[in-house]
Length: 325
Ligand code: MLT
Image (cartoon, rainbow, N blue to C red; front, side, top):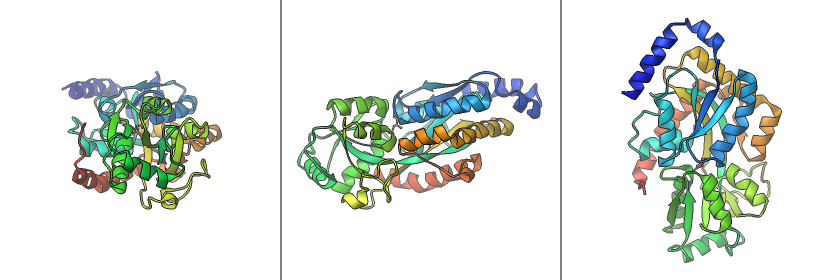
């Protein structure tokens, strides 16, 4: 009903202008980018890094708002129900825009209720622990986890989040049973990892790398085939003893379904401009984020990739029978 009203309101206001005029006057006010996890976590950081160059391109502020809960599905739902006028955007990644559809009974459809705007890039996960875990490498960590598995607490950003799925993947690979502690995002989970309230995470590289560099947590291996240019000394899981544990978290931006094509193109151009900006590339690169090539930054490439990922992952996730708590 709310979505119907939003569509009606936007239809009345959009039909007052021909599409060309709409695109020309867009944007005439600030744009809200909804982050579906807590402030300070990886999605929030990527949104803030892109927000400033997008403002320059669009001539309007990009306001970052966090709407958390249920593995990011509440924040995405807020955008799926918003007016399709380009002023409310959803930023998210593999778990929010693919996995959640297999884990939750979503009151929206990830493909039918959202309009892809731009693919951004991605980063692998990294196995990290609190500073005083007595393991010098991944093999020693696996032995320590298995010996203490009743007590080992693993932080996650909620059921179905990338940290949760990756933690399950890790525990299955090593044959252990771990305790998962859900947070509203990996920003707050990282605070508790540094403070030693939780033991470990399989976290996005971009969230953990600054803390590994500062020796506030310990890093063991990244879930990729190749080492990251941002962390050349960090071994891959293949090198460190858990071959094949490959997970990459790709990011995108979406608008509500029905957003006029001209407005999607304008928003896409702003993301493309931001991703071409040398300072933005440097900031994302320092965090271990790899930006997709220009020809994959299109709405079409994001839509095709999201659909292919849903087809690949939903059967795997459903077969894994992931519990919501
Ligand atoms: C966050 O922004 O908190 C993360 O994307 C959540 C996650 O990776 O699990």
